[in-house]
Image (cartoon, rainbow, N blue to C red; front, side, top):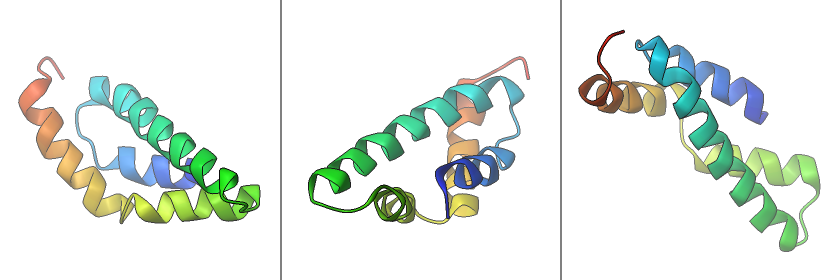
Length: 77
């Protein structure tokens, strides 16, 4: 799965619209960092991105966990 698809599925699980953008950018940074690490190990770009996305876990499960976290921290939805 590509990063953009993963991020869309993940952020669709977050009810607080105000939190979605911040969560998306935070997770994007993690994926980019891990992609860079895989590239430095000799992987090709597409392979590195897919591996980084896989390491983030299931996007629905991760999104639901983040939704529970953001629900406590964000008010004014």
